Image 1 (spheres, one colour):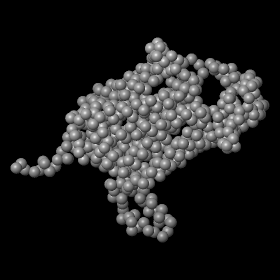
Image 2 (image 1 turned 120 degrees about the vertical axis):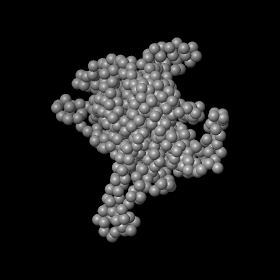
Image 3 (image 1 turned 30 degrees about the vertical axis):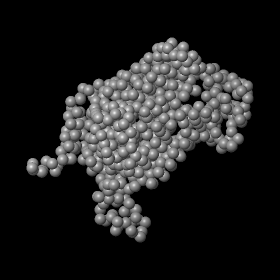
Image 4 (image 1 turned 180 degrees about the vertical axis):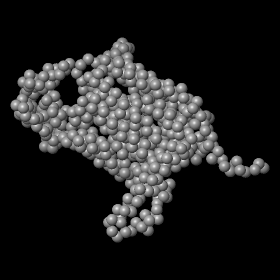
Length: 582
């Protein structure tokens, strides 16, 4: 495979050459890319509305929604840590197939909001699939990409992920704005929803207002009655109430006022659930693609450690009990192998420095937890329910798609440490545009009104600049973090190291989830005064701490990096060291 020194080739020529070489790589690498794209669309579609779904469809408070979101993220991080060991033990292909199967089941159960505990069970089931996909596919890229193309292969891997996120953002915005508040019921799938007249809808809302008053700070006097009607109709907004809904709301109001209980809402599929349906179908597509993947080039640790009593000769018993015993023995061998791998990594001399660096970077990576927990609710409460918040956030993956290959080629001569640190500081600084969102809107209005008139919504200038600057920082540090982790991982332990990368997020996500709910409840409540400048100042301060701490420990962290590089160089040239000079 012909290559040229990256310092001696042009930017576009270098990208073109690397891409041509990548096309000639294993089919399995491209299956990984395809599954990564499909899974990214599915994952980011769910993530983009999950916090809203918990609040609107499951009727959880801001704080409880944030707690559930953070707990789910915590479980994902913990299982990511474990899944790396298991994947290295059982083999990458088997690990990916099992992960995809759990995602099909888990995402399918999110369609059952009428039985509130079932979506939570579905979230729990999906934890393993979400947790496994990222480290295992990242390890698969290292397995199937040649060493000289590995950095570029990771850049493309990151581009594919962000292409999926971009598509997901527009799918979410379209479905949410088109379907939100409609709630499709089985009998309406063909005929559609036929709303009652606006006069009848408004008359009922006004009639119920004394019995169901609006909360303090509400935008309209009928908001309390409308909220009651949404509970009765399973989430259907005032504008979509049908004649049947009006009758059901009247009867429910009479029952509640008489001391009875609120009747169960009719079965229906909300706009959020239709998004989850799309995600579940995509998960099925991923599962089918993965069945076409070749068995791992490396034998699984389970096979290598198999006991003769549970080997091939012993796996042909006639009784069901003997079959079960053999399967249990195989599972115990798998778990022993996974534990052995984990214990071995804890004894690695460079491990502590590696984990310190990964741990402080979690404060930078937490901004993306806020992007999916704080941002959606903030945008809707600050700018209105029709704001295309998911489409605005999709600017991030769109920019990443174009920035990552360019930035990757421009910074290929610099160390991963330097690129990660610069990117981290830029990412942290991006939050300042949310802090000064109002002055940014005024400035944008003054500058661009002569050019575009009223065609643009200048209120969104701060959020747009936040996404743009954050994307530049992310394009610097995030792909190089994959490369850094892969370079620090011992041979055959790549998935374990990728899993360990997520361990600090295990501690961070519940804190960020609770923090998100608290910030929204206090500084951007559903009803009441907004103080969003304070909200984003707190987020900025917590993000900036990460790169500052990393700088403080730079000598310790980099010493481990240099030691690992020296060890790898020595391992690559054993023959040269033992051959006498001519």
